[in-house]
Image (cartoon, rainbow, N blue to C red):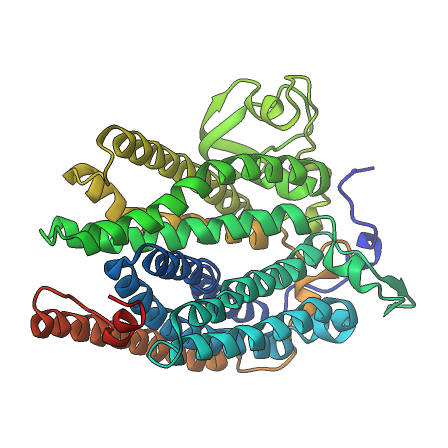
Length: 471
């Protein structure tokens, strides 16, 4: 008997083939989730960078740090508004596109989202107070009004990750006569995948915000804007990202090992293992076709060593999954490639972080070599690409299940027609939102540059904030 056969597979195997709505529904969900997830790190970590600059400005009387804090708070407000729109669309999509999930498992699956709603409102309230308070509050009380913002962002992110982890390792409920009963909220939230997924996502958020913001100022330095504002704007976020990166490598390794233990089907796709065996090689690149791996580069015993610290570690392969429940070959290849791209980018960013640390330690200053700045300029985009790859591994690697062992994706999708039309309307909305975000950020940049010209040698200064700081 195959040992990856889910408990309800016997009943589900008798289900009909994929409905026509499944493809557009999945494409729409992938697009909107891929868009929204880019904004999440800025709600969690960018506001933390803002508070570091704010604290430094007040603690050391650093005017340039105060300028950065105020600028970053304005950017945070724009991104928060965009994230609120894209997140709201996602919440509607869950009910409209996946009624099988929300109707049958909403009593359990909806708990983390209810908690996330509370954190969202808390974050919205304090973002507004912090932005409004720049010219109207005393400096330190104003600073403390910003502290709940990243904390609420962390809480909201953990709630959403809890919902995702629950789909991978459902827990905290009893399924009786096809209905969810005896729901235990703490069991739902703190499911088996919660901790490693949550830590992995939080560290990713600090890496993305740190490398992206540092990259913006690296571009400025490359364009010969070699002033202290740009060096500080690079140093603060890069330091945070450089601290998070090695921790992320460690947490990622722990997470991969947890997936090996608890989600063997996903791990088989990640490592592209056709057959259950020991002494499994680590396959680099390659394509999965008809139960075989082609064009891959094998590192002998690599997968067994990494998963169990021994060449004799047995890895359950894709042959342990019934053909009816096995993901298509192209999805297996996609998961395998995304995992390797994510890991490759992670180690490249680790090398960049070490470069930064060594150069800063030797020079006692922010490194400004052109090759370092060039690498930093693209590091944010690379970190975002790694984030997208990681979510593809998590979401696509679970297929064909929406709730592993309980609900197939084809049974969760809507029975309504015109999903492609709905997708087109959503796409148009997101293009408009994305363009509006670009225009808003560009207007902010122009206004800041105009302030430079007007203020002469005191760039970008929030005059009342400087006065409030007593300088």
